[in-house]
Each structure stands twice: as C-alpha cells, then as structure tokens.
Length: 201
Image 1: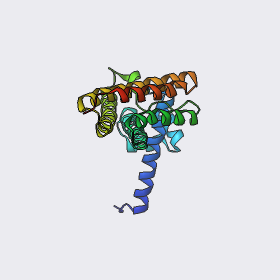
Image 2 (image 1 turned 90 degrees about the horizontal axis):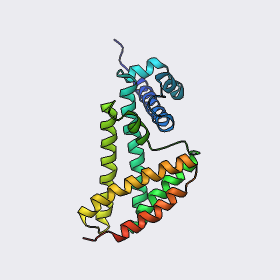
Image 3 (image 1 turned 135 degrees about the horizontal axis):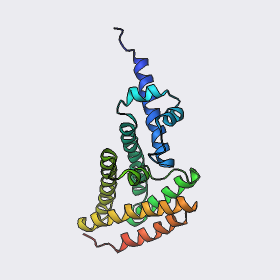
C-alpha cells in the first residue's frame, strides 16, 4: 500500500476544515433540519462522499464538530472583548458591541453558532444538546473568570456570568430578527451597569 504523502495529509486537513466551516455557517443561518449533506458539500466545494469520508456518522457527527468549531470562534470573540478593557464593566459591554459588529457585517445572517441548532434539536439529538451545553458552560466560565479577575466576588461572578451570556444571546436574537443592532447596544449599557453593581470580593 502506498504511503500517504505530507501533501495528501495537508489536502485532507484543508478539506475537512472547509467542510466543518461550511457546516457551521449553514447551521448559523438556517438551522440543523434545513442543512443537508448535499448542501454542505456544495458550500464546502467538496463531494458528498468526502463529507462521509471524514464524518462517517453523517450529518449529526458533522454538526457536533461544527458546533464545537462555532463555539470556539464565539469564545474567541468573547475573549477579545473581555481583554479589550481594564474595567470589567467596560470589557463586558465590549462583548456585546463586538457581537453587534459581527452581526451587522454578516447582513444579519450569522446568528449564534450554538443557539439556533440547540433549540431546534433539544430533546431529540443528544449529541448536539451535549455540545451546546458544553459550549454554554465554557462561555460562562470564561466570563466568570474575567469578572473575578476584575474584583467581583466569585459566587457573584458565577451567577452574573450566566446573566451576561443570557443577555448576549437574547439581544443577538432580537438584533438578528429586527436587522437592527440597537438591542445589542442596549445590552452593552445594561451589562456594564450590572457588572458595576456586582458585589466585590
């Protein structure tokens, strides 16, 4: 049997990555049920057989990996916002403003990489529900760590982080539906107020 060359491995990696990114984008825009393997293959400029080669579990396995990819990207956006300001209140508000910029840039089409799929499949596709739960937990932990670092009492930081994620998700949904980033700008104001009012350690 011929050995796989480094070039072949690189091509395989690029194709797999392209398929995951295409799936993540489609899940953001149209959800799980409306996203077919054929549609994914077309968006990724790959063949359906390639999709099944990398993801023998089919659409569900691929969707789980795509959600993980999207969750990492969303987490990176949160990390950028949280690191952008010394004041934790301003840093939290920055996350909402970054989300508003990204949403407007996508012409309101790129929603949360997790929420759309999770809500559509909750109770029916355990693997996707688990991936969504893991993503939400990781985001909450990221925010809580930044709030604690900013001087907020750990218990308060944990509960407030949950509120931050909830407000970002809700405001993002309103902004996407109305094609208006005002809800996210409003969220930025109220998030900063909540963080400033939180009990300090």
